[in-house]
Length: 162
Image (cartoon, rainbow, N blue to C red; front, side, top):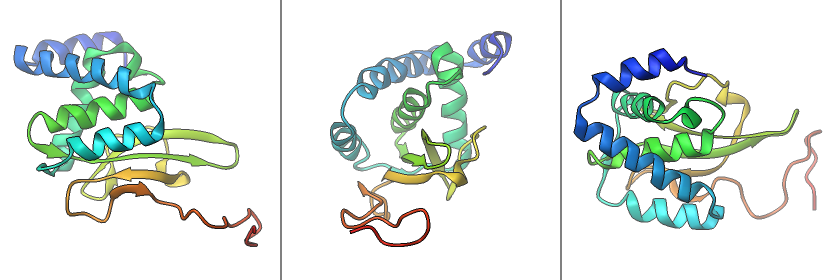
């Protein structure tokens, strides 16, 4: 979790326009985070249209500003934080790759954004997670569909189930 003094300092450095945009992105992300994965995929698929790929620096700045505006996003709210980061990036005409995934042992789910092919400022070791949904910039391989096939899934011991 980011210390409140750091969040206040970062917030003071933001212009009024960026504060308003970040606050709106956090509010929209809170609403979207409670929806189904299919609904999130649809909404993000529409919003990413016409956007250029976000650079790592652009996505990191958006993430830092989202955290500065929301205590929840500074803590354990990974879905809201990652959605707000993507939405804030979109206000400047760019789009990172939004990811949601899980690991099996011990089970945990996580959501994050990537730019330039790497996770943006993630304290969690994202490499242990399997992305189940990726929504990247237009024209990339991350077209918003599930990253895993609908068919049989490999068991933990490598055997195929089904």
